[in-house]
Length: 260
Length: 230
Image (cartoon, rainbow over all chains, first blue to last red; front, side, top):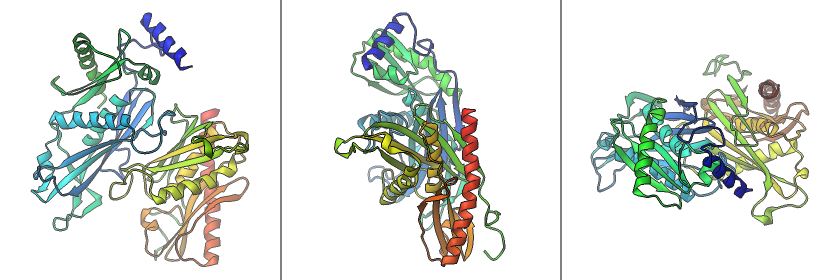
């Protein structure tokens, strides 16, 4: 069965076609970002849809002690749960390698972009800093969870407000949010390009992801600079491949950015 | 609770605003969203599929498994730590017990029917919202059902019986929480739990209140299913 799908994908690609009739470098049309989908509970939240793929992300904040080597800096933590909720082939249980990779790539996109000034998350140097948890839950996996997840994480951050806290005990009152945002100096967005045989594709379906030879995720800043990359899949990529894939990704960032 | 209204202005027998939608996750065999007040549950059904590990398989009948999950940002205070807690495991079990009577599992020997429920935001009544959403998802998945299952929490705050408790009422120190699930047409209760001290008459009063509330919720479930399939 699986083999038939693979052959089908290959035959279509030879004719320059995909299962859902899209062009190889064409994103699904309906891309949307919805803010504040969990306003009663989360400090910030968002839902991203790319076609039928749906991802929700939420921000929770806590006050903790800083790391000893970063006394004046707050921290972020990105979590992704690839649970069987979103896709039949995901398994319950502790985080899979795949979900850890996904989370870390989203994390790097945000962290390495310099978009967040971690010093601004410091409350009292060496004693108390903000900890920002960014948790991502795929609701429906119809392909390309990567791009959807990174967009959802960014949107949830944009939506977030600091909660009030007691200046003496540092106890947080989650019922009261201040009007203060997490200041973002840039907006890193990730685009994934996959390679099947000799073809490049964007916004892959679940089947295309299953049969990809290689993929490259690239995070771009507003000015077009790259701030994170991750190659995946068992296949090999030449430098020519990589350059082409980066160009394709850069070309497509706007599609996601304008949904924000 | 000295006045005749609740903190959020509702009457004692009044439900929070509800919303239901069937078929919200295309990759699942069945799915549904149920929102009551600020509690939002999304349920998906996957299966019947072969049950693993194999020793769990029963050649006589299938097994319903429920996986309740409060997503980490859905709590009303601190971040919820991911992964099943003892509370979650208990809820999974009572959900299975609440839903199993509605479907004929003997038709799927050796298989499992898995129901996953994610709570996106919570304001009390989560297991009830989860069951209400899950029942719609099972219907959407095409299972022949004896009846839908509908759930709501009844309760007492300072001796006043009320239905569909919000977080403030649920966490009231003199409060009693009574989650109830029923098959509204069969008029059978499939889940009944109680936390707190209550007199028998009051309990009956609470169950009566829940029963009529379930009828209202059932209408919302039904309308969502009709909307999906008409």
